[in-house]
Amino acid sequence: MRSQSKVLIAALGAAFVLGAGVSMARTGAPIEWLNGLSVLLSTFLTFAWHRYDSEARSYRHSYALNIGVIAVTFVGLPYYLFRSRGWTAGLQAHALLIGMAAGLAALLVAGALFGVWIEDLISPDY
Image 1 (cartoon, one colour):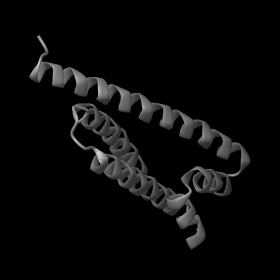
Image 2: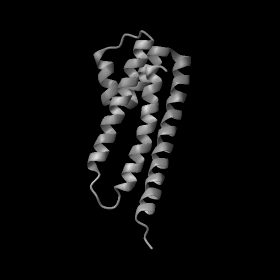
Image 3: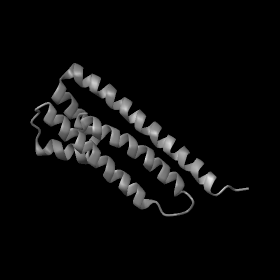
């Protein structure tokens, strides 16, 4: 399995776990640390995917692009996709990116619903 695929699988798993964690912590416990963890994890996984993909494509990227992918992902990542793949393959990569974002959102919601279900099993309000 390629490194890019491993990073994508890790992102999908993290979305589910973070969704469950947020829903289980909704009972009044502070969850700021979980939000911070979510931001750090998503930033790390996005950059790791970018590095593995650019190495696989032998694409020479600048430090500015690295910073762009980390700091301004919604600008840096589309720019990278078009520059590394060309116009047609770049559009296909964007379609996959949108699909991946939808999958992450769906797993986040599924994790939250799972967390609510587990919480109700542990402490039912009868």
